[in-house]
Length: 24
Image (cartoon, rainbow, N blue to C red):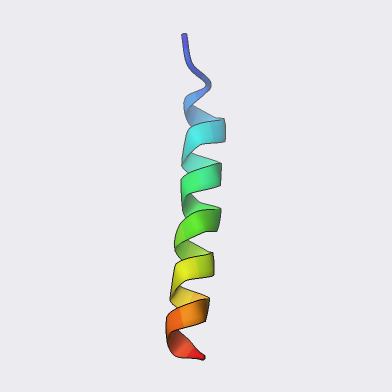
């Protein structure tokens, strides 16, 4: 069984990085 919480956490971090790069 995959670690869903870890997946969601990593995806959230990636989305934050993308949004930050767009706002700059």
